[in-house]
Image (cartoon, rainbow, N blue to C red; front, side, top):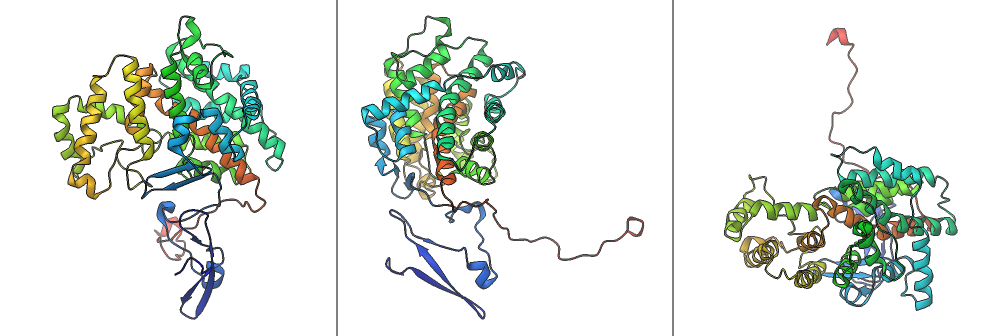
Length: 429
């Protein structure tokens, strides 16, 4: 079918349907199936929605076969090298890069919301010591709805207020979580530091003798940019689906946190480092490669492969170079975990099984090594992912709510259960 065609014909028995083709500005066009059931009585079957466009969006573009990721048309490589997280956040939300004046106004709006209600601080005191940081994040994110219950989802200013509020409060929640599990005190916001420098100071500056490294600050900025958005992934789709019901947006954001927590999503960065700890040494890699290829073995080689990318994840290449820089700053160029990761990657990229199955390093493979080098605890890694992805979730929620066409999400199913049966009274069974 040619690019110019805008209709596809579908015949099923005596029924006939003309389905419109919606054209994209980049990437595959999509078949509009909204009239399919009405015209043919059929639904489509697409487990996990791997071939279904669930919405229309102008925010992020991915080409998994070519290894392309772009925010509002800007390649991720350019943004990671030249931009900052707050500038990228502005780009995602507004659709254009800011002038210096616009960026300063944006920064101040985020800063003004970098505070927490006393009730949220008290909430952290109720968590048991065994609580996982992501359970704390999901709970505290949802609790923001208690203090911000009246978000008018159809009003532009109200959505704008929500966006800046959640962007400002998420780093405060992350700092409160870290300080809770470590029994430490949060640092203070410092006007002389950039956003990432302030995040690090909130985490570690409470003792007063913490020096924010410019290398660490830049590395964190890069990680936050690379994780800021990734199209309709599991967590973003969760925020959109929850938000489509009209629920409080902080509750919708909490559903995104819950989805991100999973080891097949954001939790993979934590799982990768645990895998390195299990492998331990380079000479044991072959054994674990064999386990990964054994379908009867539950072991999985974490950090390889991606649902979308069938080539090298462009974010992984950037993080790998950032890892070199961070470890060089610490004079840890022979860091054993990094050496293990590099060797494992080299072996996998030359292994027929991994080549055949398009298993390349993904964004999670090296990111945990950087977080660990910064002194961030292993169990906090996915919280760091949340801190970054908040802007993507909030932008997608605002985009969805700004459209008058938004309806509540309602996937269908292929029912394979029993046919109609008559009830039998219990005494006759």
